[in-house]
Image 1: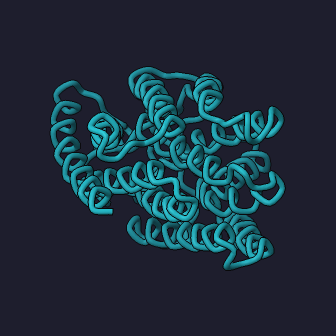
Image 2: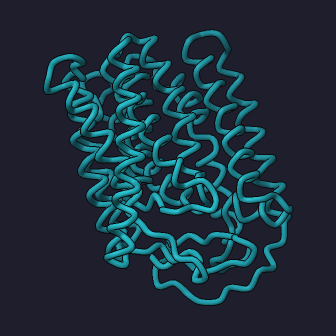
Length: 342
């Protein structure tokens, strides 16, 4: 318990310090996330989160003070590989298909096939990869992925503690603390961006952790909690898919874009979506611990569907000022829309 608190504090301060250092490096090297041409935001914030998480969690494993266990150790190594893939996507344009396949390959090394079976393992691999890529897509507004990530990490960490998976619980608390340290620099107006490196890493660790905590439960009964923990990112993906099906063109289709059109401030968007994520995570925790029935997830699904259908009616009148060669590039609304480079 005491080590978990100390590790979280160390991760918070280390991530905050590394973020400041890497921001200066990104500016020097010209590594910018050009979501807004009037104010380019330096990248490499995700690198700070990854390094802080790996350093603190790895130190606990290396010293033996807080052994992670073989399963969590594999998760940490695979997540590091996913982060490296994300960093490559930040530096060069990589197709979403390549990111999905690479993340799925890493997930295949984490899933406990002997306990959930081959079919369940394949489904878990696909789900982990999809959630990781969805977190990258959610990185379209200041502080959004960091906020959703912190809330989700705490919730999944509670489930891990209930299952007496102490190593996984420590890893999740460290990740939540590292994201909090990063958010000190990422709250609107963001001074540094998370990037694909941090977003893929965060989504991968959280999705894999949910799968590990649900190991031993019936596959059918796990579908509800898995969705509840990822309700916001699922709603974001659904909104984008439906909007682009209806308009047959890419555009400002994400949750934050539509909420901004309703008049919310950037900070307000983060608070609203963070609150919705907390509600979904709370339901997931209650269902996992047996304090609520699986029917409670239907309420989360219904709320997510109503949110998507309601936001589909919001007109996005902002005119795009450029084009992107990358089909999965995301756009940011900051008064007027700019095209994100990459």
